Every structure is written in C-alpha cells, then in structure tokens.
Image 1 (spheres, rainbow, N blue to C red):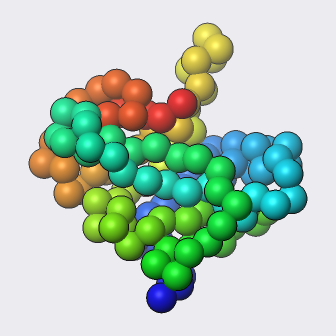
Image 2 (spheres, rainbow, N blue to C red):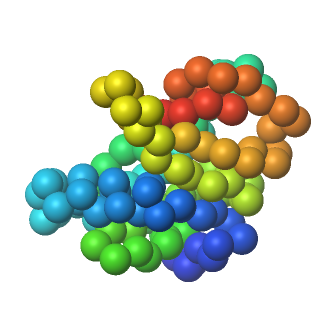
Length: 120
C-alpha cells in the first residue's frame, strides 16, 4: 500500500534537495520521481543508487519535496531508515550524491555506490 515517507525514514539535505530540483526541472513531465534502490554489493553487502522513474507502485513509499518526489519500495526501505542523502560538490568538477548515516549496515567504506560512499 502506498505510504508517505517521513524524515525518520529518509532525509535529504538542503544541497541534495536543491540539486534534485535542478535535475527535475530538466526532465520530461512523465517522470514521477527519483527511485532510491538497494542492490547486492558494496563493502557491507548492499549498494544504493538512484534513478528517475515514471511509475509509482502500490508497495512504494513516497516523500514529497518542492518540485520532485523520492520513491522507495518496501523491500529497500528497511535498509534506508535513518539515512541522509546529501549532495557534495568538491569544487574540482567532482560532484556526487552521498548516502550518510547508514545505521543498518554495520559500518561502511568509501567509494561510489557502496554502503558508506556516494552515488554519482
């Protein structure tokens, strides 16, 4: 059943919200939101990623922001509870979304898309 996500489930920093808003201003109107997902891999067994999606399913949780939605399916949500998504621009042309505070991973490691790192 479609549910509203809260800040206890997942949060986005102001820089992440701003960048997401910019990205959504550039995409087609059929895009429903950005889907945050988990896949096997990474140092702790799970890697996270994000992709635009044109559908919201019955088993998805949705968090509404100004100009975009973040969508998480019920299988991924337990791994993301308490996670903060940030957008970091290092100023050298390297900018990335980073998943912080991964409480359910038992530690972490660096690297893009890994349990403790970012996702570009």
